[in-house]
Image (cartoon, rainbow, N blue to C red; front, side):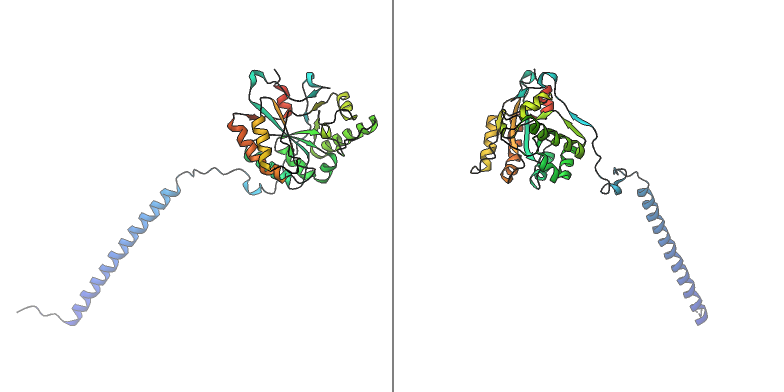
Length: 283
């Protein structure tokens, strides 16, 4: 006869099976968890390949460092002389962009952005009265490595006596220094007038009177900005000094022209230098 089973033994057997099943599941889950933990620890132990700048959190709160005692001097052969262009050694394809009449709201900032994007340094000839109104823009110009020249206080064309000429230049020099810590020995007379007393005084102080050999003609009120581009790109020669403007009026056409001028000159193999750098390259 088959063995007889009572209800008590069956219940005991079922409990045993449940206990074994639960224990088996618990062991399986523990094994899985251990595997995940080991994997996670292995991943986190790998060195991070991300460079984190020091003091990154404080970058925005730190003001740009002021540049102290920066002197834009000129070689002895150019002191007290008028310069239109330079003959660089080995006819190296270098060119100097010069920008007059600022610093100016909006326009100068837009031009600085373009110059920075293209890794180009220029020379800014400042008008003292414009500098007085826009000191923070001036500080940025210097902080970003551009050269500075004197363009008088009032941008006058008229003939003036020696005392007035001195005041126009020295008052601007003083404000340039007070605002940016810069001293400069390069001067450009407004309108390029050489016989109204300003250039004579500048030369007496051993400044170099810097004119230009190539103009964008960006003061022409009728011309489209493409004309400015054509004037510079087609007229470029090694050692040329280019005249442009960021102040004294609406210069949005110059802003539009600047990227294309830079691109066109780079395509011809030109490298951009400041006026002090260019004067050092005279053969």
